[in-house]
Image (cartoon, rainbow, N blue to C red):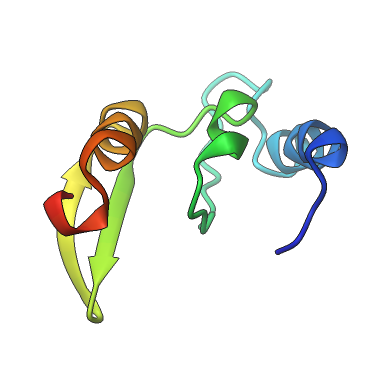
Length: 77
């Protein structure tokens, strides 16, 4: 939280290394929480879930979900 934009890419690279994103057939996974989605430019996320009032409101492609949220807000997620 509160990471400046310049360091998001650096942190994202480290997350990718920890999750084995450059390893073939990596079985590692992680949970990344974001409100703005900027980190998705640097992390190869395969799934996204939107929580609203403690319940999963939507599951799907991270880029599609963030595009919809940017257009309509979280209420339409």
